[in-house]
Image 1 (spheres, helix red, strand yellow):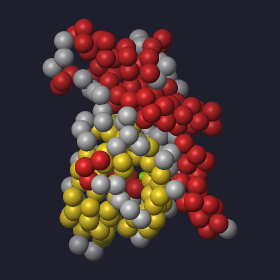
Image 2 (tube, rainbow, N blue to C red):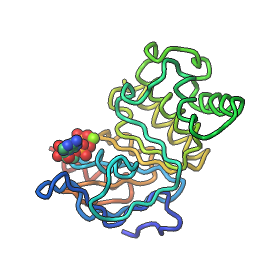
Image 3 (cartoon, rainbow, N blue to C red):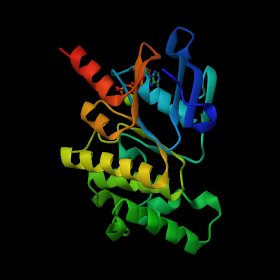
Length: 227
Ligand SMILES: Nc1ncnc2c1ncn2[C@@H]1O[C@H](COP(=O)(O)OP(=O)(O)OP(=O)(O)O)[C@@H](O)[C@H]1O
Ligand SMILES: [Mg+2]
């Protein structure tokens, strides 16, 4: 299948390999591209290397070989928000990610409020993090990313710990952010129903991008493969 041109991609990966040790190759010669402003998903069995790929994209791991190009800044949302949210309150956590940008306090405040409004959390700005639901925590994590004006948003199974209503709310919200802000998003999931919301998907198998393209075609293929 045709890969988006490097110049118009929000995420562009070529020949990416990653080994934990010489005998333990996790990803081997992966190439993929997500067109700028599109929402793509990443599928694959447990242990197939999806989280590893996202960490390579985010620069949290260094590839053994290959090239990774992403529009900056990049936001990352983990499966478990308790690993990500570091400040005592909602507003302070979103502001924390802006600390290095050299903004004035009024600029910081306006960015925080704008980002919280976009995830419908403005009313909870002063709420302690411990008093949030799982879905609210994931929305704080997303607000933290969009407050930095991120160009790319990487999400590793962000709905894994959520109930069905919160799952749907989160995927619809990211769809809207991609449309409204022109963000490029890559979302890891095992939930085939979420494919309804994306523009395309990649399937990781055997350390490689085994298939990619139309999400409904991939969904049908995976459903047919499930006994
Ligand atoms: N820190 C680590 N040290 C050693 N091996 C690791 C580490 N993290 C992951 N691995 C191994 O790398 C392989 C890919 O793991 P990864 O977490 O990327 O899979 P995944 O596709 O995200 O799986 P899941 O769907 O269960 O989240 C697995 O074999 C895993 O055991
Ligand atoms: Mg994973």
